[in-house]
Amino acid sequence: RRRRRRRRRRRRRRRRRRRIKERFRVRGTSIFPSFSTNINLLLLLLLLLLLLLPFL
Image (cartoon, rainbow, N blue to C red; front, side):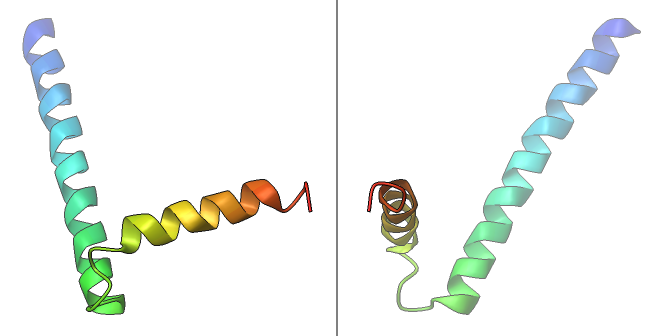
């Protein structure tokens, strides 16, 4: 019984990860249809700006 519960938990985690990825893809295509491939670059730029703000 314990083994079955552990397997179910692992499957649920995998499903959640897949759903999260699908949500990000949908948001990216709906908000930035032409910048769908540059979302990662935009996020990196925002993180760099946040890190440099206290030094400025």
